Image (cartoon, rainbow, N blue to C red; front, side):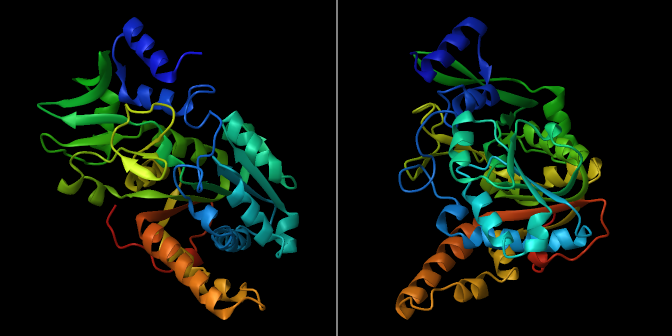
Length: 368
């Protein structure tokens, strides 16, 4: 079997340079050989990175608590949760485990997972059974009253890389003895993206344009009849994303718990990500009927939902008090300080009277 790098090289030799966006898409999602479509653990000690659900079931419990409030705001009717890219299914498992303590809600809950990786879908099905169904696209799910949820998904959408010279140029990937980058004039669609967000890049500034994210939020808006969208990921609004500190772009790779900036190494065996532009999600969401309720840090989101109190309440009564304190300190450090300040939570709504949600008690003051 050919290596994924060999497949990409053959494609370039046959068709000429490919966009970085196409290179990233192949690297992550090529059937059976891409990072997310191949066997092997992606998260945890044996994988390449940790996610918040992996650290504690309390993360899922807090999202469950927020969903409970959303269900009440939506009229306590049948409520559909659509989770994109559920990974191992741990977040779904922990949310459902919490919601079983709210039987009136649980009886009216439909949990749908959209998963395009056959490998990840099989992992999810191992320990997810009741109230869960799988779909290829959101269009396959009937009109949705509920919440569309994603946790660390949008950062893995394949992005176009651009750099401002005398005009906006797009990065393409070529091959001769090794992979190297060439520049070509950017398409009208890429130029229009920046114009719609009122972004004027200085000369020499390199960044990413995530057209898939704008298409994704547009699809969500058209499929959601009434309810909410929760997007959890790392990134910034435009006011923070296009600053001098980010002039080299934000593409990074994760490989065995190390971070690098070499996407052309170890192709298919490392994750490739870029920061999310939350202003873009708000802009294209608003154009399609989604109202932006607020953006906050993951730390503020969890604290507002009672994370610390819930942590203490769920500590085993026969657990060593010292161990309980150590556990609380570890989770506080990981979820609230390290990941909690890096990750943001964006909440949008459609078809509902605006309500001050518990998780947004302390929204970010950053400008969109």
